[in-house]
Structures are given as C-alpha cells and as structure tokens.
Image 1 (tube, one colour):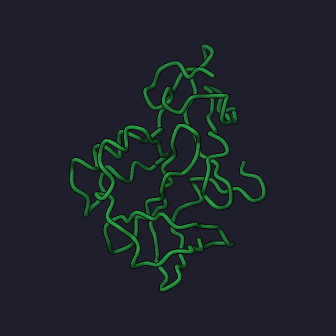
Image 2 (cartoon, rainbow, N blue to C red):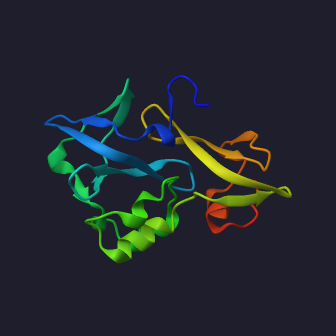
Length: 174
C-alpha cells in the first residue's frame, strides 16, 4: 500500500533508531498527527525503558530509522500537557498504550483517546482504519487507509476526511 518514499504505521514495529549519540531498539514508533496532517512529535516505545518523546527529524533507511537528534534529548511523554493530546491523533492497531509501562495513568488515558484504531462511517459506508501512511521522514501523514465491510482498501488523503471526525466515531465528512 505505501508507495516509494512512504512508510506505513504497521511497518514502525521493532525498528532500531540510530541517533547521533547512540542506537535504540524500539517496540513501536508512533507519530502523533494534528488536524493539518502534520506530525507534531513521535513517541518511541523503547525496549527496556518508558516511552520517549522524539522531536528531531527522522528518516527511514532500510530497516531502521535515522534521527538527527540525540538520545539525551528524548523526554518522557508526560512533558506534553495532557490537554495537547485532544488536538492530536495517532494509529495504534495493537493498542500498545493500554498496557504501556512507565507512563502515568492520566497520560495513558489521554494517549489512548487519540487512537484512531476502530471504525467510522462515511457516505453511508462503515470503514475500519487499517493503516496510516507517512512520508519517508514521518513529518506528515499522507493517507489514512481504511477497509470497508468487504475488506476493500480505500485511501483517504488530507481534504478527503477529517481526522477529528474519525476519532470521535462520527460521520467523517470532507
């Protein structure tokens, strides 16, 4: 589904992240997206540690992510005010944040509330979100891929659908 130079959320599993000062092994990588389909920040679910907030530039190179930042610059997700999550969405098809360790319960609830995993209705058709497709630098969401009740994939781009409407489970209008 993703084309050349694009990366799907489902591919952001078990990747190594090469930063300027060290390498990290991640379980999951979650870009958080605003209503303009731009990535506000990325959360790295690091093996053996609590999830960390990543704000530096990232790019996918083969089977790893390369960061222009330093591991020392990573911050706990609790440094983001919980209210800021109300303006963001992410896609976690595994619902990893439900059982994540090292994050206070109030932040886990705020983060889980931003997850677009699930169904929405548009034009009388019920869709289930299947994937997010990002540009190669994870700086913007290029498409939301959903499947209808016959498992036919449909790509929605910015302007086709409102992320906030999908998040709230309401009719997803253009």
